Image 1 (spheres, one colour):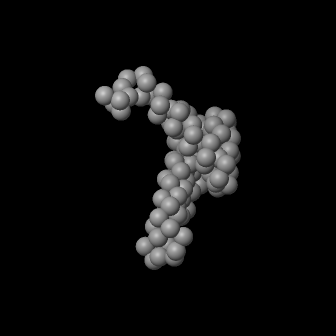
Image 2 (cartoon, rainbow, N blue to C red):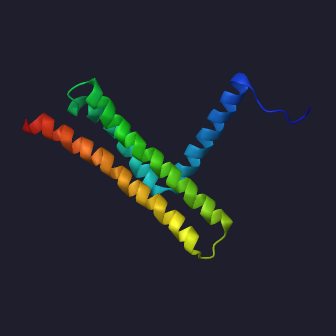
Image 3 (cartoon, one colour):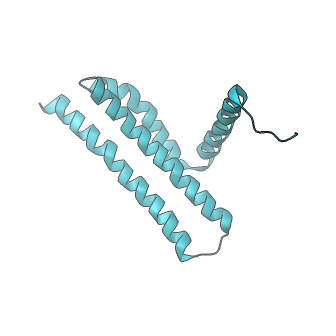
Amino acid sequence: MGNQPLKGFARLRAAYANSMTGFRDIWRGEEAFRIEFIAFVLSVPAAFWVGQNAIMIALLIISVLLLVIVEILNSAVEAAIDRIGPERHELSRQAKDYGSLAVLLATLIPGILWIAALYTKFCS
């Protein structure tokens, strides 16, 4: 009876605490995350200034949030690979490179949307 899973609000509270621990850890250890998270925070008010309507504002904000999420997943993959061991292995390299590629491709999404929004605001 001693090790029963949490239920209801206790489970949500524990999940939130774990998420905040993860945020603290990634903030301390990953410069790319810090840069992207600051960009996300700054993108919220900027989206209200640049966006022409509610849909565009939401897309601008969500696009940067998506980049942050992909960076978190990339960091998780890297941490798992590093946990396995420090020796170099082709599959470990591939996993890390794939995560890095995902981040690179994810940067295209806000890049394209923000350029289109800025063009619409200032050049139309």
